[in-house]
Length: 390
Image (cartoon, rainbow, N blue to C red):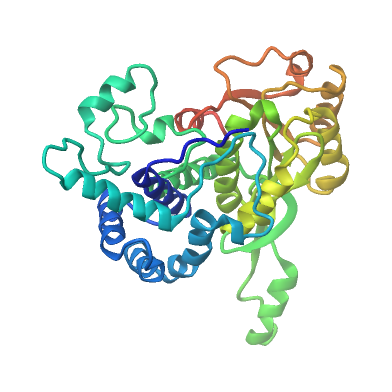
């Protein structure tokens, strides 16, 4: 198989900047232009000095400073990493830094010659809005420059800007606050309660010589509902898995949700949701590996109800399933699996990436077990659904 043609140096630098943004670093147009100037200044043979300059431009905190070496090696020297191979079916162009900087110098020399109309290489944020608007007529997303569509409302599986991640976290916080808590059989001490706490009252009376001058009261303890998120990462959901995992991570942080992924098997990824480093992302990729092996939703739901969440599935628990509903198990098995979850008192909400409820036979048979269907193809859908998620 022939390799794809090498990308332009400025495009490689733009790709590196996008990777930095995906890891939480604030790298905008100004930083990209400064990094481009640094590459032209230091040249192709002074990589150590160039990396130090880029690091000073891109890193603004101790966390970012410590994260830089791993991200840099991952992009420019992937051959040095072990266990970082991801099967995608595509051949990626070489991203050698020295060759990229050399190409930049050659293009700058060619542009400086008299009569040459070629302009200096552009970064991803340098595209004029006028030319980009013409491209936006065919697709709601722009490849660079200005766009008429807010990124928050059309972001699906691409790299996310820090402000968009912050908006997602705020949205998850709002939805979590609306989840209705449920009373338990336990009691807690309260200044104004429903019942006298005799034991605590007697303990307080010791300070008063046995006189019951400071009564203690108690009320029913109210706890927030437990939230479980099951995300489908099979081949049919490959283009939506990134969005689903971002949303799941937001609720893992805000609502202490337990997060599972499934395709032909079920695996819990909750510990990985509380950390966001390249090494953790590799582990998530390893867990979600298995695209193309089919989707066993019914078997995964049964394993979830009988093993992973057996002691926590109770009245008031919420189970959110992110899937298109296409199942390789028998069409009647999904309804039985969901019934096991419902029998424990949990409420099931099904998030699907299409405008309409998927026409999968297994999902149609199980509709009576599902409390609510919610379309989820972008953050705009999640923002719209926050009024019905309670």
